[in-house]
Length: 220
Image (cartoon, rainbow, N blue to C red):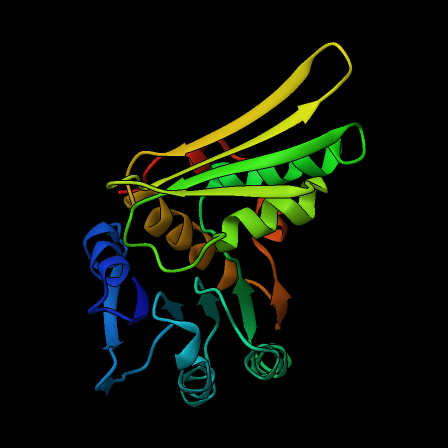
């Protein structure tokens, strides 16, 4: 069994992660904004917030285990903490745990510079950040000049990158249909990370090393 510590378990994504764990994962400990119930663990998955970074990396040191960081918005000081943590533990950090989005990033990198491009991103009305961390990742990968952010209803997440050539366009679109996909992506990354040496990894590192079709299916 893989013992996983869920940081941010009282949040929406923490709850979804807990319900999405496959049969060979067991919750060994958890934390929310008021408490940390720790125990020996094989990996930590953090779905809390950037403000918890100091507590998260301290826990990785205490439990001496790998860490998957699925939060965004870290300050330079908080990012420095993550980098320091990766000198002693395997750390995978990504602003989006979707396999599909990370494949889309690779396509954007391939097309970067081919033509002017712009991004349209839509999320639910309660999402706080605008543009989203994912949209900023796509901007960096594609070289997009503008991001158009929409906050409507209960949309989980839609991202479109449009490359405009003289007489044609290339359009890449990713639609998140269920927040569960982010939990499943983090689980897949955690399963991989526990066998890696210490260092700071991206989701692309995981994808590049593992192109098995199981990436696109639940592992329950």
